[in-house]
Image 1 (tube, rainbow, N blue to C red):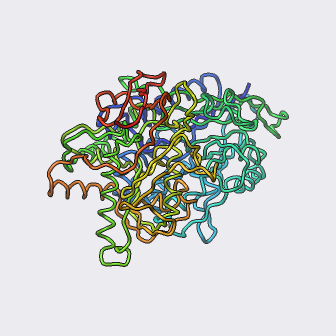
Image 2 (image 1 turned 45 degrees about the vertical axis):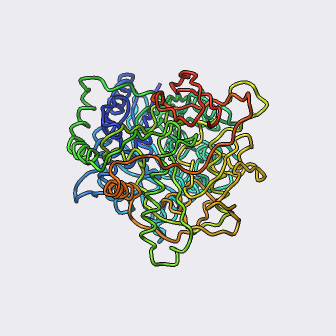
Image 3 (image 1 turned 90 degrees about the vertical axis):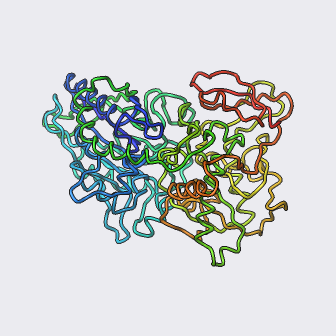
Amino acid sequence: MPRLRLIATSDLHAHARPWDYLADRPDPRHGLVAAGAAIAAARAEAEAAGAAVLLVDNGDLLQGAALGDLVGASGLAPGETHPMIAGLAALGCDAATPGNHEFNYGLPFMEAAYGGAPFPTVCANVARRDGSPLFPPFVLLERTVPGLPRALRIGVTGVLPPQILMWDKALLGDALAVEDMVDALARAVPAMRAAGADLVVVLCHSGIAEGPREGGEENAALFVAQDVPGIDAIVCGHLHRVFPGGRDFAHIPEVDATRGRLAGVPAVMPGFYGSHLGIVDLDLVAEDEAGGGMRVVEAVCEARPVPPLPDPPPPAAATILRLTADVHDRTLAHARRPVGETKQPIDTYFTMLGDDGDLALLCAAQAAFVRRAVAGTALAELPLLAAAAPFLAGGRNGPRGYTDIARGPLAMRDLAALYPYPNAVCAVRVTGAEIVLWLERAAGLFATIDPRARGPQLLVDPRFPSYHFDMIQGLAYTIDPTVPARFDREGDLVDSGATRIRDLAFAGRPVHDDDVFLLATNTYRAGGGGRFCGGRLESVFTSTTLVREALREHVRARAVENGPLTLDDRLSWRLADLPEGVEALYATGPGARGREPADLRLDERGLDAEGFRLYRYRGRR
């Protein structure tokens, strides 16, 4: 039977080569090189069976690794091709759509990067303020499919989260307008059909979430499938998860996590960093001998794991290695630049329990930068706080996804491990009431502990992104996980009466709702990222200095004053003591053994099936 194979990548995040720049060691599991070898194999497999092939990328391509940061900071010379674009082109990519992180280095850089692509880039829901499209809303591609009477016309379109206007507000200003994904596709899909598309493929840089739909959702792939007729396949992404397979989405009505269907529409989500390929095999039939109409009669969806890169690498992988050799060498040189020294290991293994010297360091760096910047202004009269979250702290990043910096010299790669995103330092004016909302949002990280239960209970919700666990320097407070969370992991209000934050105080006195503070944070958070305080924050100071650069300057200043870093500083929050007999289990990385903080009562319980090291948490000593 005539067949078209759709091969999709998503959320590669500038992982071009099989190298972990944060750990400074080879990593054959992830990256475009390993994915490229798997793509070549999947293409050959399909072509040997007489199928045509379409290769697409679903966004978040340019940012997320040190290599992407180096290129994003230095920019592209006239005629220079971004290494990730060059790699995809070498693999025969047919079309792409941008993701939300494509905007992290500003609009001119993104346009230059995709402008150098030999394949079309499409996006249906982003336009310039004058109404002109940033990218074409769709493209029609033709493929000769053995067994069909004429060339197959495939319409490819893409969409991304409207929240880019909040997340990168400091860079984008009012240059763009972004439409709801469903509304945009409701126009684009009929337009593709009217232009002659036999099939429609949607590159949806968005995740899968439950309804009801309200409009403007960040994760709208299911709503696209439900509300926009005429789609033959959807490539999802953004959430860094795998579909079909697993348990992440199996509980959602109209989601078939076994066959890969969203409201009956074939769909895939290919993990992240090149961990998987999304593969959709579409069996086709022509309505008549002249090929007047063609339709899909069967679809098989697969999230195919990418195997480790073989040695020697196959030709497709070797080509990408050659194309990225120079930028790899430059990235290594930058990542290895010395910036200081630490007397103690810096890790995030127990950050969620209050062993938060890493967060205290980030907070201190942001606060020091803001204090200097606002000196002599009215803002300097406000009490200064600082917020920070652990970025690499397990959960969806897996048991290897922790910051783990050895005692001794510090390099730029170590600072990137503490703060991997290209966000800039800024400050917001907040009231005491908003501080409570901020902390309640962060406290959703903890699962609700039943004090009456006597079986094991996970203390931390593994689905909650660690980068939304904001802790605030300058305040004292207690988090009680036996109380239900006020906000869920998406930031939605689920229990307006829930109060996990207790004993909130500043300078030894209770914080009142009408108290006013200056809070040092980052541009992602100030722009609404994470929906803290409903995403409505009053920015009063912004800068173009990256948090990582402020951290570097802080580490250097500390070295001049005091020598190598110590992590003696801690934030002044704690978990409430749990009732006697409660077995609360804390999952952390396997490297946590030997790093257990002396002030925590912990009983090790070994490794779980996923490779996390489990501890029973019994409170502070």
